[in-house]
Amino acid sequence: MPLSRRQFTACLGASALAGLPGISIAQDKTLRVLVGYAAGGAADTVARAVGEGLRESGHTVIVDNKAGAGGRLATEALLTLPADGNTLLMTPLGNLTLYPHVFKSLRYDPLKDFAAVGSASSMSFAIAVGADSPAKTLQEFLALAGKDPKFAAYGTPGAGTAMHFVGAMLGKESKVNLTQVAYKGGAAALTDVVGGNLPCVITTTPNLLQMHRAGKIRILAISEATSNAALPGVPTFKSAGFPDLVITESFAFFARSGTPPAMIAQLGQSVASAVKAPAVSALLKKAEYEPLVMSPEALDKQVRAEHAKWSRIVKAVGYTPED
Image (cartoon, rainbow, N blue to C red):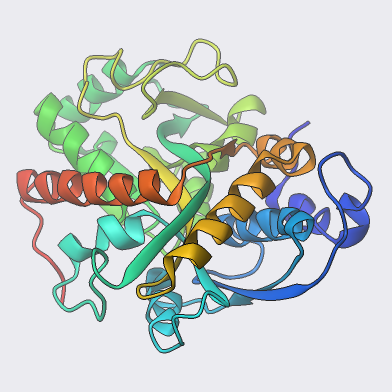
């Protein structure tokens, strides 16, 4: 059975990973990792997993949770520290690629203030309805939503999130007037869908898998480019007729801009080795995250490409940036 995030986090102590293939227990250098979300959440879980893997390259990782403002507090905190490579930010890419287009007054420039180090994992987004919903497919859901507004609401973890725009794009491309209901986190929206109080939810795929397998919800489509072996019979948005809805989210490590290139290269190699370690990779997969290894150069290109992509998407759906 897949591990819950709580179980997964509990497995990440030194006792859990010591002695497993690919992990050694050398502790020479302390590395602080800023995470803009609470302990036990998705970003924290991934950061702690890779942190344990970094032991192999001689790092002792201290995860510093600075939750608040959708992850922006931790992002801003990095810029108050020296560019010496002793502190990294572990963040969803959307904080650097989407946020600039949904907030008018960010305190950072994602293309100038950060140096890409390496990626850790990726995940997709999905749309799901309750088990008792009359909609068995994405097409049936859109047909119902088009005929009756009570079926047209979709819950998300918050306004301005990637999930918000997945729904907005789906509505625009299907010509169905879908209405976002912004929650303070995906768990509350999922609870309302299971209870029959909300027609559907759009959130990260890992958050939905266990409920889907238990028969409490029905995933109608995922935002991956190809079908997911963990979800037999579930189509992608692309295969369902929405090719622009190929959107994934990655967790990645960043240093402050100005960190010496040699140090960035060394940290990038350490992160890549940690993610590749069999113990870390296996735990990420059990928690429904796909391990992802990217060099600093490749990650930098990805950030710039997604920054441009989100600019087009936000403008296309007519979203007004917040103050």
